[in-house]
Image (tube, rainbow, N blue to C red; front, side):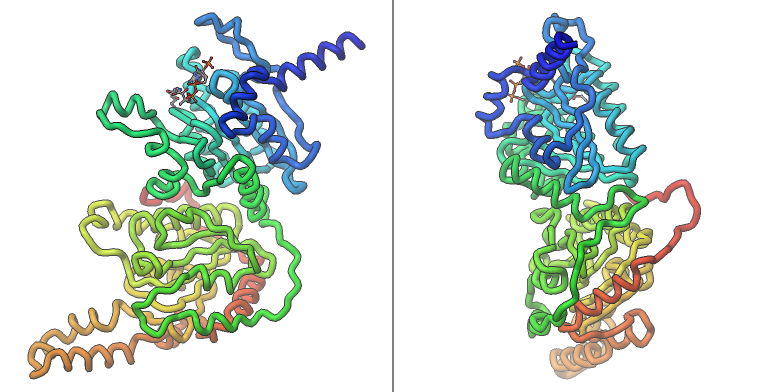
Length: 513
Ligand code: HXC
């Protein structure tokens, strides 16, 4: 028995070294942690239980039978984060560039199946050169096995992907199908085809960073939801993200203890500028409304005309969606609609109530928007809100014009409680545009057409540039003093805590993709 234990310990030591000490040092020299260090950092101390430590690949082509490493380039298992069960895989770049072989894929699939059966999140720490080239179609099949599981797990358990090194080819599609992707600045890349292939095929000269670095994917493509300065920052952000989510779609998010205190927020009285065209930062409104320091913004630098993120109100997890007047005057466009729709759907999957802050002059006009499909993309957000069955509360702070009024969680598409500040303006369009259309003849016939337009504008504004018409019809439940906003929202979310709403029976809807 003693000999057998010695053999076991030798093997464990070998498995822990993965591709060997030199390669571990190489990983550190690049400013990256090893796969094992990442797992240790992510999970609560001593909670990690490894599964499949001694798995090796089965390839004999290209002399591969001589290159055998325990674990085959991926560490898999389970453990806890803040006491909550999670399943984790961490690719080891020091073994064949973290590339995915048939057995590497089998290990990932095994923990994904367990995560589904036991209702706990899956966290993938990705660092991979894609399909293991020496294995051909077997590695492609391995990817497809993972992709199918990503889709089946979608909406059942949260899936989070951290990109912590180069991820090429198939290595990017699994993260793309998970709920959230984080990228580490300067050490991670995501692309379907790398700079060399791009140069050969299109003659474009581009660096890996420009093509698929964290900055590119957090600003231009929106592929990544969060960026991190380094590996440690990335892992801390994963833990924070998890803290707002439940374990699975059958559960509610964990509620933090909260003691009610002075909930009046006097600062909210002065947030809306005098002039209707002057911008203000919707984040300032969010900060005043949610529990202190609880706002965790997602997709911060992408489609900045809408803000989305997690927060807590009275200790309860709440997803926040808000128009941002600081960017494009808060108009909805293609990218902001896609960004918000995806966030709304995540919250709806995992029973996270939604707070929607509205200040929207309408959809962004122009050929660029029309030709890029604002119709079908705007419809995504409309669809996402309309199908969401979680508690939904709206607050109109200023403008709610045209179709965008309907889209932004209006009463008509199923919001539960709709509040407005006295500064709200709810109408088909702004007073000037509206007067120019409906009083066109009268204005043209007037001696002083400018004066006439101003008169008509005033008349229209008096009729519609306020929330009381909407409140008369019950489309707004209450017009509130801004300082009372937090109290009203705390009460509303508490009242809606046990909401049950069902959609008509169907296989699945057909969101305009
Ligand atoms: C086998 C691989 C590998 C791969 C890297 N390695 N990628 N081995 N299969 N896919 C090995 C290298 O041979 C090298 O081994 C070690 O990993 C480190 O790689 P380097 O190139 O030295 O590292 P670096 O310079 O940092 O470049 C990383 C990289 C590059 C950008 C990821 O390795 C690369 O371009 N790899 C190929 C990417 C790719 O085209 N993958 C296949 C995609 S097709 P040694 O022994 O020298 O240390 C695909 C299809 C799936 O994924 C489609 C599903 C939809």
